Image (cartoon, rainbow, N blue to C red; front, top):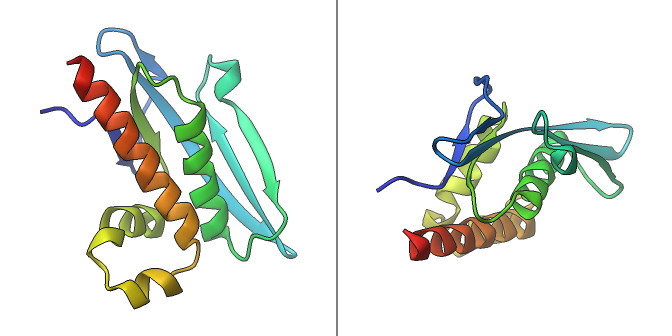
Length: 132
C-alpha cells in the first residue's frame, strides 16, 4: 500500500507529478532573536508558498514543525503529498511521538504542533485510502 504522505530529507526535483497525483513541498524553519520562522515552497503552486514568523517560537525546531504543519494544512487533500525537510529531529519526533511515554510526550518542545501534524497526516491518509 502506498503512503500518501512522506516526510523526506532534502532531495528532490519535481514539484508535482501528475502521473502519480503527488505534490512535493519543501519546508524549512529558522530562529533568530526570539523569533522562529517557518517557510514552505512548492514551485509552481502559488497557494503553496508561505513564509511566516512564529513570535513565540523558542527554536528553529518549532519553525520546522510549523512549516510542516502549514504544508499539510494548505496542500490539496485530493493529492498525495511529499514533505521535504532537512530537519531529522522533526522527522524523528513525528514518526516516534506515539511510541514515547506520556511524560516524554508532554515535555517535548512543540508537542501540540507534533500532535496537530499527526492528526492531519491521519486525516489525509483516511481520506485518500477511502477513495482508493
